[in-house]
Image (cartoon, rainbow, N blue to C red):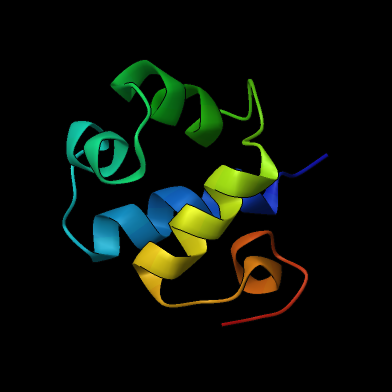
Length: 69
């Protein structure tokens, strides 16, 4: 099963030219946490979804793949 959140997160991060470490610092998690999100090993809490969506200027629905961007 594909994980649109993981794919979208990595694509958005690369589009913004952010390292995993810089993204982690921006949302208040570790680089390892971002890595695990991108590999679909774990999922973020709602609070982190809001932070990520705000950082990228998109909705949570887009971030999670429920809507196209």
